[in-house]
Image (cartoon, rainbow, N blue to C red; front, side, top):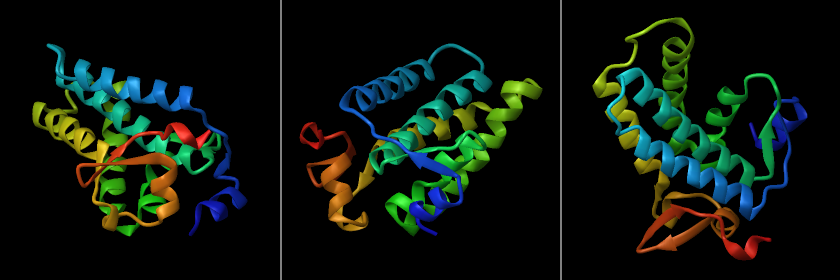
Length: 164
């Protein structure tokens, strides 16, 4: 199902992003990665890392011209990952959805739901998500031109200045 079909279903709504918005979101990701290494509980480290992953997915969705509708915002933002970057990212979206569920438990229901290894794994995942792969692994030259910069053979999440 395409993002346009998601919009037609009411799951997404059109959104025009800006350099300022993307820059702010990337700053949040960097802050979250730094803070997640702090001397705090594994639950908080996990939640902070989750927020970084969510922001990276939000950047991708924004670059495609969408934002999630009010219902299931986190779920839709994460689930859009393979719709934007291709089916090879489906397992990543499923992993992030599992993280979303765990984050909800440690945020709202109880203490101790995320282990140190859970937090470390998610922090590593967020760092890797910032570098998405080679150009051949990603679909669509248009996507590359809108939201990425080719840097040493890798695609680094970055909003191109000339987009605006």
